[in-house]
Image 1: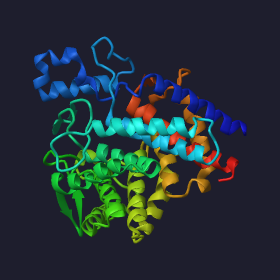
Image 2 (image 1 turned 90 degrees about the horizontal axis):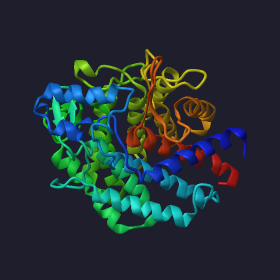
Image 3 (image 1 turned 180 degrees about the vertical axis):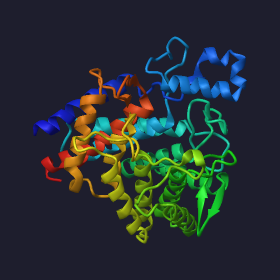
Length: 404
């Protein structure tokens, strides 16, 4: 094994050991309102107080969660990312590499996480749907109550469960997961934009301006089409892709959303957009959007990564560097079948991240700043994203050693 690959494998094994020892439970940047102290205060009824409390937790490089009684919990998107990662490790074991677990061990873990994920579904909706394990104040616009399903959390869970189905052939998992398309069609609102539509972020009214969220709705529907051949779902998915492509700038970039306060351009949401459109094309066989993907990928690679591998957050400034940025580029390029072509860059990015954003205990930091970085371990935001990304990287690179 090369020194480079050995470094990644050792780093990943530390991360894997840490996450397993924590049983995949942990804190989150946005879980401040789970504080038993805050829940005992009348401030919880005031939107500005909720927003300030959450932002204080999120921005502070010092972790007050233990003192303020915020419990470590499972997060649905985090569990989904771990499940996706274990599916990649299982595929690696099938290729002859059991450095990260035997097929039997990995299969057991996949079954356990699939069962856990299905048990964490939000109740009372038209189909399978997932939310987060905390109340979340989004600016002053929305209060997402705990377990309010979002298209983002739901899409990650759908993809993970369908990957697990490909391995386990558990028909119950397939059947229960595919009902998420009914959640998208019946429970999310959608707004006409040009010749297409934009899906809402959640079941709450008015949050129908986020491009990547709408595309994740299309991604869910495209998976439904892949397994059920429901043409209505494919048609509706296409409308969301049409709207998103219409909103792509001439240079290949996407702003985050349509509100004035959502006009930034960042790395990992660009990655989400590319991944979702590529998934739509693969699942439906409709490759009419390839020119948008090519343009978007070119912009992504040219604007968000420094020569030494440092991943930028925004197109026009570097800091703060968010751990999502190095994680998502690995997953996106693997999905788009362009990993091998960009392996040198991805290896640089991963090495920079290991050197600058991993603790000796194995977990990854949330943010890297010029001044004081946030070195708090967040199970979903940091560790689950890196676990999935590194599993993708290992499958792409180590399979070569075993003749796959």
